[in-house]
Amino acid sequence: MKVKRIYEMPVPVQDWKGFEYTGEIIEIEYPDSKVGNITNGYRVVKGKFTPYGAVRDCGDHYIKANYSTYDRIDKETLEITKGVEDR
Image 1 (tube, rainbow, N blue to C red):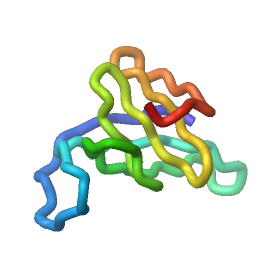
Image 2 (cartoon, rainbow, N blue to C red):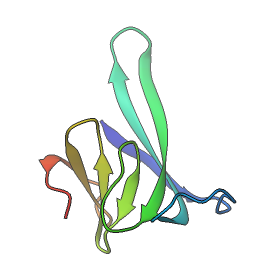
Image 3 (spheres, rainbow, N blue to C red):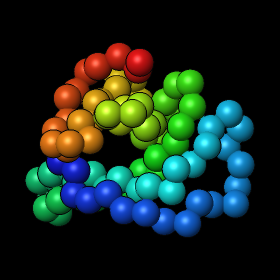
Image 4 (cartoon, helix red, strand yellow):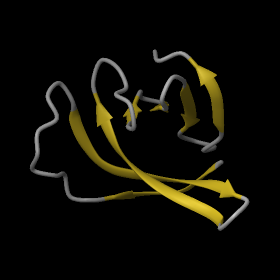
């Protein structure tokens, strides 16, 4: 898994209670043995915790919420560290 790109997009009109959209989208590429690579886009939010299926801006890094684990994405290097706490 690796960060493919980060780009800006207009902030959506919908309200996600307790969170604020930053306008950033992070695309993460996942290897898939059947079809090659799969890319998923995640909206970046700000808030007190990271909701499932989203990425939260934490200042110098991002936290991505999976089903039951969290990944840390360093903003400078885009290196992904799996299995971290949501802080």
